[in-house]
Length: 543
Image 1: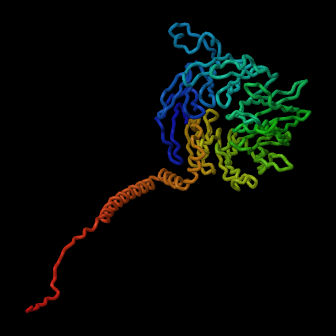
Image 2: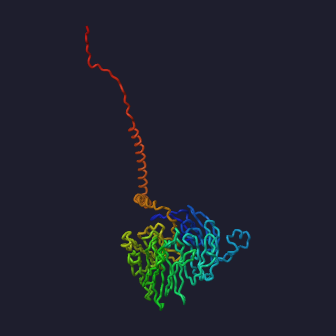
Image 3: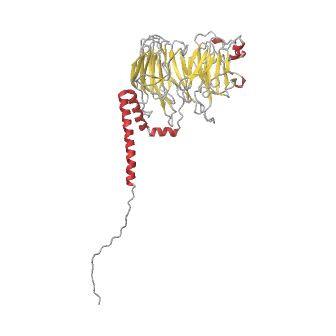
């Protein structure tokens, strides 16, 4: 958590006060703090550059000298870091300073730097593209990575520059020419194309180009490193496109904002690319509204949209937004699989979607200047049978001044906060269970940021998971006891006393059970004795 000029790392403690991992530090960063994608490192920003921290007590690891650095980003597997500064790199005049300066003469004037996080050395530097030099709102990130850190890519005028790691040399020593390219996105996972033999999946990126006098707008998928265009879709009367990859790379949704010929009315289409099927079929979903937000459920083919009818009345006081929950209608012998609405909620101000990392639960929020609301939905209310599943509102909570929301990696807790970076209204944070029950409400003056530490992927095998599920009731009882101990001091003392008495009883039983066993093991000894007894005496006279 970041408040005032202090940054602290804490253990989540449900309803109780969070426990500091280390002593909160004043002046820890001059701008903001940030975790790497898997939570291995934490980074602080300073006028001289970036500092990395890690280990059990978040001790200093490395310093990355990049004066006046403003923006920081990382590759998915934490191998590389990208930094951007508005100040061009200038070589020191002093020979001693130049000897310890991480950049060489070839980096003079550059502003974008890629670092090797393991060695702490500079991997590559770039000059800022001329069209971005004086741009106030800088697009970020400027370098985008493939799912396995094998490739990175920068966009320039009418071209993409794809680099191989770790050499960071241009792929095939030439640019990928794409006239008029507006944006591109890597698939977040390896794509298992039909007929592909790559076990981890193929490296695929998507891009779009706008309409011109002689050409329609286009969305295309390209395989890297072959540069082969796998699929192209032509689009008409396009105002804008946003590309949304599903987490596993199985689907790409392109949200296409379109206009009528008069350009007075706008509406949206959703174009779905099924990347694992033969020839990558594309399904079009035509909406009457303008889609203002879209979010895939993690590791699923379900999604949620927020849309609004463009009727010319833009009064923000009128609740006109529509929340729509979609799932896939399975294919039959005569019909292909297609997306369908399972639930719709109308007349809302909602503008933000945030899925649980584990899926099923989603927060639909309203984030505005003075008002805020969180609605907690269960999208599988009828259980795992998606044919009958529907979205059910579990709870709604008000939070005036809310600026951000974020799920913890386990999908059990949601944090919502009001940041002083945005405004001074009710700064602080609130914690909720995934069902919407409030756990904690902390008002903190000059509260700035709340960040859950990311977790790496689970190392459990399928066999381990089956074992956990089989013993879930036993584990659940243990967790319930731990929760009860944390919730109340008296309960904690009672549980500890019960445990101590139980251990004493077990020790007593063990001791006396051994003694009883010794008694049972005594062998009987048979003593033999010969005893003579006169039963009858008879005297006989012999002549």
